[in-house]
Length: 636
Image 1 (cartoon, rainbow, N blue to C red):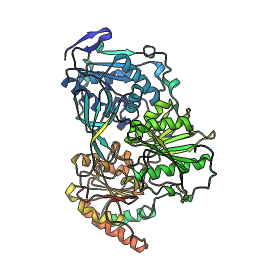
Image 2: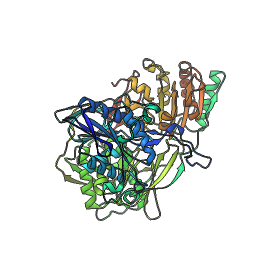
Image 3: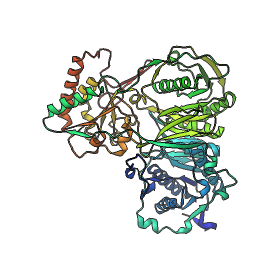
Image 4: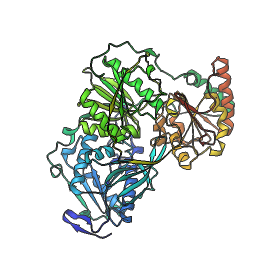
């Protein structure tokens, strides 16, 4: 690569090659995370590594730089130990590394981190392309990419693969929650690399040690400007952690298969796992609230393409509004006729006409928030919602809590967001000192309140379209809300070949279950990626999860931590899935499934459970829009 060393050991490209920056993060090795008896994270001796998604970003950045005869510079913000991930990146082909390290950076949340990274990109730039990982596996916020894009006023392409650059335009296939889009956007821009964008390059310890120290430059806070930086620039903070529930029993049944199945079904009956969501509170109508002058104080941003998700988030907003003694308003880019919004309990609906892209929707939310001064803004924890919320948070200069699963109200009406941490083994309590408080929220399939019917007021605000990322083609693999709305889910692993899914039909019918899968099954194409459960897929909370022929492990177990009850079926007694199950049947799934289906059907019939209105296959229905999978995993 044509380049020369210049001051501080930095390299600059000579000629017309692309200048590419890659943002990486050093994280604890997820498989090594352990809690002590008090539920605290054991930090002593905890090994560190480059975030797996960042490895893909590095590999993609190096590839594009080589194609254009350009250069690839890798940035990280970390303590001095962060030099290790820069050495790894350089060892696999990056030109140089920038380590942002300073005590002043300590305590940075995503707003402060993205601000510092954007400042460093300005200092060492300009760059044609900035690449980051889809998200980090330790925090799973996915906010840094779009926040950096907002600081730099650049387009953002999320979860990209099949990337190419032609005449100053980037073309990529952007993976979505329910399919993919073929997009193009002008350079410069920020891009997050998809999980399946490339095979990540790795370097051994010897190659890392051999990296010339002159190729890594340390950058202090003072070099980036006056700040503030770190904790002083971070509106959000951790207010303690709690252990994320108890471990499952991991009980494995042995012996006669019929006896195992009978005992397992009795266990599920005792846990109420076959009939309704265990432990779900009774649905109570939301209290009638007085109408308020001005705008309601709780706002929720809704994606018009995600009906089930929108309904559940609206329920979360009305629930929160009831606890705050205020009202709830939904912010949408367009009206969706199929939404039965009068049953959602909302006080108001604001339509941002013209806000058709994530960037324009973020601008609309920002303008509305400045006028209306809401107490809190909720958004979905999806690719769409994360970009909208991340950009709006930067524009408003407020904190954003990502990927929360529960909201509490503090004594000063402060919102406390609980979000998974340490590989979902802990829940961090996050508070924000800024107003409005912003939270991206995982969709809850079991809203705690059934709202009284009310007709919300409707306001239309017009905005000019700003769509720097143009969609050339869009394909839908599946309905992304199927697993979020299911009371029972059957998860299949590599032990069940795609052509054998029809043999699961009796159990699907008996449980009225939706079909899910492991990452390896999705990679094979046996089921759509929207059916993937785990660290890099859906995090679901059905009453019952049945793992069939699925090996399991930490990455998959993270996605089912919130399931009410887990039943595992596997012929390998050493399969990790048994440790993450409440009860397990040790046997060949081909024999177990029909016997289990018969037993469950008999028990339900004996208990007079009315199944007449239930559908046989895995179907999601939202406002009359149905999408169905056949048992080969292909969309009908």
